[in-house]
Image 1: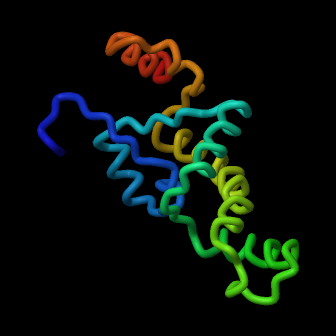
Image 2: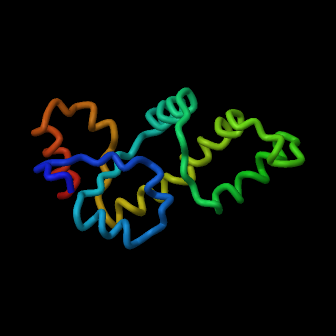
Length: 138
């Protein structure tokens, strides 16, 4: 797409929220979708990193429709207008991660491959990365 011989696209976690088979098929036809599957410790680290440095999030209305009433009840709020956004994000984000894990796996199963994320720690160059990908493909 950019004329590079080799290109790594870090699509980010929100891609699983697209729920668009045509887009996923296009990505799968032109790229290798590689799901870096975090263990529980790394998952906690990633959640904490997101809480420490929040960024814009995309999720489907169905997710919000499911968690919002629960949050309002737990916080004894009468209306979403009473929500303090940072507090809601801190409460919601771990639930979003939990919601997304099976979606990531489904994408990997249907369109790509999964690799244990801790294997990335041993990559010291291009050859190591290629070996990691080849192992995932075999």
